[in-house]
Length: 332
Image (cartoon, rainbow, N blue to C red):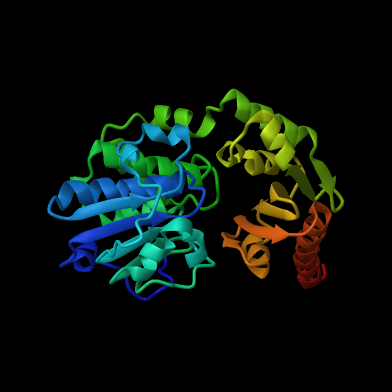
């Protein structure tokens, strides 16, 4: 793996002289966000007992609460708190920090640990590796392996498993598998973590997934699959945004499809768009074009307009990439 910035941070150097440290991740935290934040949080609490450490995240999905320390997560930012250091993880840009952004901006020093290719190094110090499988894998490489406890290993393993699609995605490198092996040797129940946090779904999650699959459409000569979940459907099923996790990945598995597009209505004329690609299309480029970000094969953006407008705009950018690739193909 190659660092986007020229230096690899040394955790002890960053923490030197720091008494109050805050950790934070992106809005609507997923498995890697929770895993990386909690893994580092538990490590700092264990290895730096004199340091005051807080972690700030939006409401964590119930499935992730098997990870130690999640009951200590703060979901509101105090108005007058100033930290010596704020470490943001798995966050491609400042806006994605959500409610904890003021704490980041007031902090005396900031650090960003991330693997989003769209990250523009917005902190004072940045450890950004776009080729890494996950932020949890990056956190692992900052820690003293001998001092990683079973609880820390559980958090980091969950994060790596989630962002690699349980070690299926192309971001899974030999180093990723070696990292997972080290974590497994800490005595974690890897199968239980994967089953409880990745595969197991509530009845509501299965219902909303069924609706998304049933109402999906193939477009662009069946190269793309699109599905939209309206707010009225969310209300009908009494579903939360966290209940939608995994739907776009399931859509992506459709045979013959290159890109999956999943729209979740946030408000009238406003949609959260999730994009997944099998490889030919760089969806991070599309998301960034409309103000979002992410990875080559997994990205997201919030867009305004009707669902038809959003879909038309996204598919136009997909077509642009596909047509460009066809133009570049050499003659036989």
